[in-house]
Image (cartoon, rainbow, N blue to C red; front, top):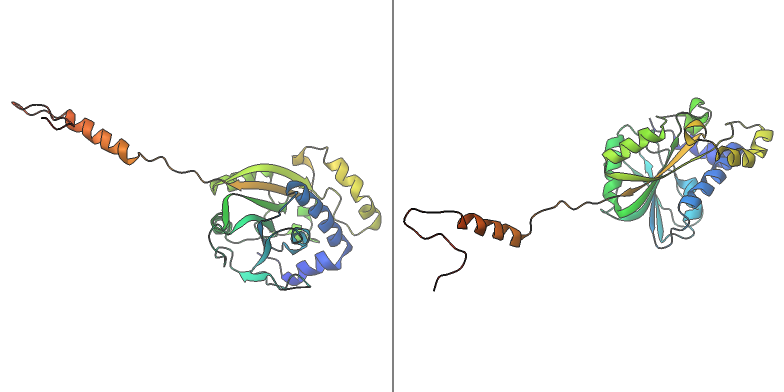
Length: 254
């Protein structure tokens, strides 16, 4: 089930924990995508908090919000770029985007297969998609006090398998939100130390959120060229023999 847009907006823009989460996750996204200059970037789910910095350098940004979640206008200043859409029917042309960012989109979708197929359609060849999902082994997925406590949490292996089944190649894995999901000020104040320490640990043991980047691979099926087909046909004719007749040749006899 998708979360309600009112609750998501309240968490990310109305709570200290939500604003801290935005800062940490935005920093991780910037490490994975140091630049999006000249790119069309599409966000799906509730990606607005992470699109804020990306919007400053991208060629254009589109913020897709699932119908079951509801939509809110974004950005606050300037022309609205938010669009209400179905999971498996995006109002975008094929191969329209070089980057797609998921936040609270995949894990809450009731049709994840259709969603990934639509993502593959809209993404340009060799384009990149970044999924930010709850980590199954993390503390954040075990508490419903934050949006990461809803939907299907993933392990890295589970997400990789699902992506490969839909013709994506995972190329980068990271984790974030190593501090406990608590509003206590002393925990939030030490978030930097938590994140620094957490990066030294095996990814499968810590981190409330997984970040998995994948690339769209387009492999052309091998088909014999026309010349190859003709050559094979002539070769087959040459092997045909008729009693009392000369073998068929690919050349006209003088």
